[in-house]
Structures are given as structure tokens and as C-alpha cells.
Amino acid sequence: MAKTATIKTTRTNNAKTIFDTFESWGSKNDKKLLYAFIFLSLLFSALLFNARISEAHDDALYLEGGWRYVHEFPSYFYTQNAPLYVMFLGLLVKVFGFKLLLFKIFNVIFNLLSVIFFYKTFNKRIPYLILLPVMLFVSCNYLIQYFASMTFTEAFYLFLQSLFFYYFFKLYDALRENPQPQKHIKLWLMLGLFTFLISACKSVAIVGVPALILFFLIEKQWKNAAFSLGAYLAFKIPYELIVRLIWGSQNQFDGQSKILLLKDPYNKAAGNDDLSGFIGRFFDNCELYLSKRFFQILGFQDEHSIQLNGFLALLVIVCTLAGLYFVFKKKEKPLFFLGLFTGAQILLSFIILQARWDQPRIILICMPVMLILIFYFLYQLTYNKDMGRIIYIAVIALISFSVMMSSVSRGMTNIPVVKKNLAGDIYFGYTPDWRNFLKCSRWCADSLPANTLVASRKAPMSFVYGNGKKFFPIYSVIKKDSLTEQSNPDSALAFFRQNGVTHVMLGSLRIDPTKNTGQIINTVHNIVQPIMQKYPEKLKLIHTEGDVEQSYVLEIKY
Image: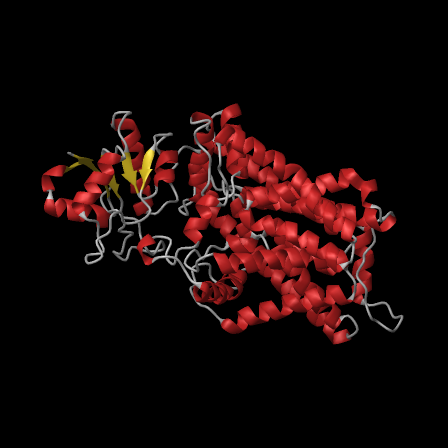
């Protein structure tokens, strides 16, 4: 059965409108439009290509995890979050060696494929005046393109999510032609495969399973609900058996759940959150992500702004829910499912994540579907009004212009940086604090004996720039004294000795990454300072990196 636009409108006259004209033009040029979005995606991937690793740490964590899968197999299993992308990086390390630029190129490819399958999923299913601005966002948005050349999970996940959407629509079409689920085993298995893969790539995507079941239960399609669960388990069960056979009782949720339950992920002593704490997280995250991050990603707000606006958050929620209501009312059932799935992702993320994480990628992966719902609502609202149609076109033109200009301006700024990086200056583009920290990590790898173990506040980044040397991670103040808020010196020394730590690296990493205010991330300093005060002879300065915002290496003399 040929795909057709499923949107239902309420226009009562027969006059041809600008909406109709645009729809006719889009239908005639759908292949050209796909090629245009492919070109735009490749263009902005080149303009915004980043040859370095980010200061956010997680991309380096994934790289280190991929390396450890190869070199510590089978004793190592990645549990900090969902392991699929890290396993994929491990496969690349095994086949090609540790090649950072190659890993980035794979993510560019995943990003391009996500653009292609996203277009194939929604082409001729929603009006082109909804599809085109969303496709411009998917193809050109600066943050999506940033992740396209970084070893974060986002490009990989958006690719898998686009295939999840694609096969859901294909299965839905097949079930409309023949409602007997057993006649579509291949499509069920493909949907089950990508339901499993997205949940193994991002833990929050586990909501895809109950969302599928709930969707079919709402439709009173009991067999389809059972088939959706069975298709997922067809891949989940063998995966879990393989994991237990090779790595024992490991689980992707174990490491995350312990951190997510804490009031403060950097201070275990504060204890776990209670019900009111999780409710507070939800409202805090609504403001953070739906008033600040949402509009930053669209280019309407400076990316370093800390302004929150409860009204803007409420506006986004109302428009998104109104779009979901309209797709339900108009019986746009596949779109209603995508709304359920995306809403469940947002709800779970906002409840379980501490507000201090405040990372734009949390909401970024949900924004394509959110924008479809918001534009759907506005499209329906304005369809029968001449002035309304003009307002709608003005709104999507403004959003598209903002998205494009944000990417172009960042691309122009990025070109000289990436040229220097590709020419061999791997530190160009970092601020002095980070440059000194990473050079210090390289010095540890080049100048210290191989059997030394250096404690580092950003151990995965030290690992990458230290050419694979293992560093000991310090994420919070260890053996903290409740009175001083610093480490107990004797307990800290015993802890280091027990873990084989021979050296400590002290960085001057800025709290405000945009400027040197003198305030630094002092986690390691709060461990070292009490030791230096009580046992000055036990710490020896052996290296200083940089003239300002220096990094230091101290040798521990037990």
C-alpha cells in the first residue's frame, strides 16, 4: 500500500491555499528534498567537525570503556550507563586500533543515516510544512552536528531511534492491510531488534517497551501487545544470557541506579533522595530543559545563559500536549505512539536525573518528535484562517532561520580550530586550564614509568591524551571529614596506597569554563591539602605544566 499523508484537516471551502500549494510542491520534489537534506547534513558536519574530545568527560569515558573491553576482556563490563555504544567502540578498537578520528567519522555516518531514515519515516505522512522545518533541525542543528563528530552516544542513538520509528510505521502499515500479527514476523523482529538496541544504547529508552504495549492495549489489539513484548524479548533474553555467560551478573542499570538515587552524585554522605526529592527534580528539570536548553538548542538563547523561565517551560509543555491531543483526536495513531514514547522518555529523564547534570543532550534526542507535535498543533490551529496560515509560515521560518544561523555562525568560528587540530595541534581550541591539564596527562604517559598510577579528576580524558595510560579516577572527595569537608589525611593516604596510586595530578580546571575567575574544580585539592598540611614530606612536586592556570604532578612517598 502506498504511503500517503495521514493528516486530517477541517477546511470547509474548496479554495486552494498556500498550504495546499506547498503540499503539492513537496510531493513532486520529495526525492530532491531528501538529497538536499543529505547535502545540508554533510555540509554542516564538515563545518562543525570537532577533532578534539569534549570537556564534558563522557565521550572520553566511552572511549576508555571501548579500549578496556578489548584489553581487559572478559574482566571488564561497562556499567556507568547503557553499554551498547561502548561495546561498538570496543569492536572498532579491536578491528582498527585506537583511532579517534575514525571513531568520529563513524558517528558522522550514523548522523547522516539518521537524517535519511527520519525523512523516509515521515515523508508523505505529515504535511511538508511540518516535515521541512523539522528536517532542517535534524540536518543542520549545531548541537546535533556537534555530537555527530564526538564520541558521545547521541549520533548512534538518533540513528537507531530513526530505525525504530521507521519499522514501527512499516509494521503499522502492514497491520492495517492484514491485521493478523503472525503474518508479519519479519517486521515484528525488526521492530523488536531496534526496541532492544535503543534501550541498550540509552537506558531511558527502555520506555519503548511499555509504550508499545500501552499503544496496542489502547487500540484493544491484545495480540499485538503480546507480540511487541515477545519481539523485544527475542533479543533481550539472548543478550542477557551472553552477558552472564561472559561477564557474570552484570547489568547496565546497576552502576547508574546507585548514582541516580543519591541527593548529590558527588557526595554519597548526603544520602539518597526521597519521594519529595524526585518530585522536585521533575519540576527543576522542566525549567532547565524546557525553558533554557530547548530555546538554546533552537538558537534563541545564548548557550552559556543560566536564565530560567517557568512561563516558557509551560508554553512548551502546553503546545506539545496540544499536539498530542490533536494527533489522538485526528486518529493519527502512529504519531500518537511516537508522542507516547517521547513523552515517556522526557518524564523518566526528568524524574530520575539530578538537576545539576543539566546537559542539553537529555532533551535534544526528544526534540524532533516534540517539534513535530508542536508544529502539528500550530498547523491545525491555523489551517482554516488566511492570517493564521501566514502566521504559521512566519513561525516556522523564524525557527528555521534561527537554527540555520546558529549553525552557520558556529561553523565559521570552528573552521580555523579544526584546521589547526587536523594539522597536528591537538590542544588548539582548549582554554589554558584544559590545555595544561591535557599536556600534563601526556607528560605522565611519556615521562613516568609504565607501572605508575596517577590519580586524576578527569581520568578518561587523561587516558585519551595520555595515549592509553591508565589513570585512577577521582570524582568526589574521598574519606571526607564532616567538619572540614576535606579528606582525612590518614584515611586518604591509606586509600591511595590500597588502590596502588603512586602520583596525583592537580589541575586548575575552571568552574566557569568561559573565563578565568580564579575559582576552580577543587575536588582533588581537598584531598591533597590535608595530606600536605599533616605530612608535607609525603608529597613531592615533580612536574608543573603551563605559566597560568597550571597543572601539577605530585609523587606520593608512602
